[in-house]
Image (cartoon, rainbow, N blue to C red; front, top):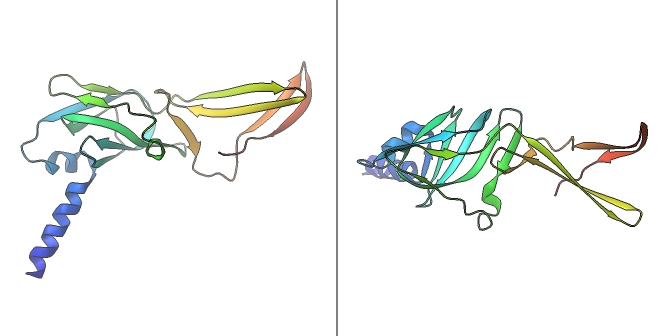
Length: 169
């Protein structure tokens, strides 16, 4: 009786949290397989949310992944360089669902190349700088190790007039 209960518990855990494409294919017996092409590079780990609420994780996903046909959205991307995108923090702001069909691969844009964006705003004698590190799909990244925040230097011609670091948040 105990062994059967453990087996049922393990099956439920597997169905609720799926790790890797092999597990994704086994989660729903008889489900139609689909494919998602990844346009970004250097992805160490990718987490997608299936429309039913289950998360699907892929380690070193490469250029395409096998998933069950359905709707998915990006939840987390970890890059090999130590930068991570956490889309699950404010999911209501980004409802970009990707439809995966059985005939043609869907496309997900996430990962490198990364683009550094600095917005400057002047208010009297104060210059406010806002920094964002953005992926190929427009997703925002932050460094996992926050002990070394991004730095900046301001020049007037060839003369250095200010420098500092950006604060997280």
